[in-house]
Image 1 (tube, rainbow, N blue to C red):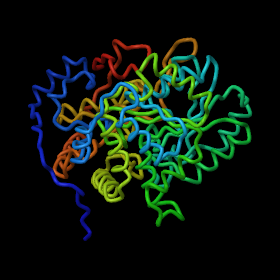
Image 2: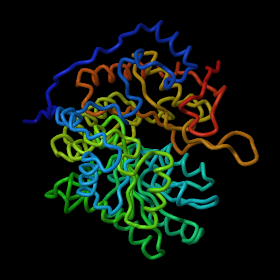
Image 3: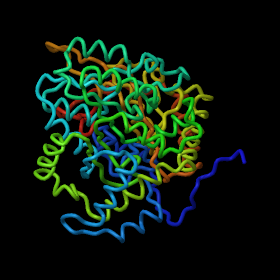
Image 4: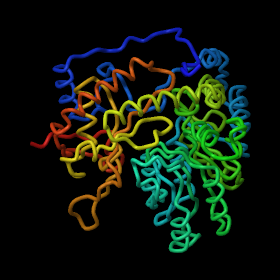
Length: 458
């Protein structure tokens, strides 16, 4: 059949809150024009993030009942460890309460002030944890990534030439590790090819630099490799994932994405000395190494979810959903990052709002317009999230792109919800010149987008 259906049926429903325009205006004002500060009870379609917001399967809910809550060495831990090792093959595996805990432990134990960490695209918490210890997070996206509207494949790749130049300029001794984020979230959810992973590994091997994979969406990346890269069409997603991880010395993972769970993550490596450092800090800040801040039931749910994420029918349906929305928006002249990413639609807010400058925060304007028009919550990936203070003061340095991400929770919304989303964006698009500028009135020193306060300008 030509129609790609959801490979599941619905057993339980959850009521959606429906609000009026006037109610949403008052609610957004009381949240200081920051949708992060809204109560979820006031959001109709929540596309703020795909992290921990998915629906678990009957197998996962069943697995919760098998949770062994022993403090040390539980059966649930052994099942979790076995599953992660089956997929990724690492010698040392440490559960954490979520991905940013793994990032924090990695940064705190391996980095010092002035170190440089290259990446195809650091996401917000990865960058913040690196910068918190005084190191420098450097993005080296492919040249194709700059072409937001092009249909070139594997735009999430790392620029190999710039990686070699950075190593030459900084010296291998000042680069404790290199990271690859799969898929590349800051670059529009774009995938990384197996060839690029292999080539990065080869460059690093020459200088003795370890490779760490940010594996939040490893299964989605494996799907793209199967569908788009020559030589992988007949391979299973599990086989592709294993090969991808085989090039790495370690990994950080938020199981709230391709673990299909509501909480959890892990940090993994092959180096015994690194493992000792990870273990010691994990005990201090997360918990005993066989639970890492998670309940046994969570370890069970993640163990099931990691393998479900590698089911081809599930990935095929998920990507068909993203493509469905992308095609509808393109036909309505709404500028998005193309081709569509694996977990989200990324709108080019600068192109959508040509009357606004980067310093006007067009992404915030579009995010707020989405909420006011239809109760849809999204997130800005632009100069609020990734802008930097200018050296010596003055106007801050803008982000490379002004994007708004519509992240799709896994197995949550149906086609009619996405048709509604398309209708909301169509209505905003016809009045886009009315989207106002915003300025920040209050912000935190790190990850300011979570708690910042904004006011309209003009």
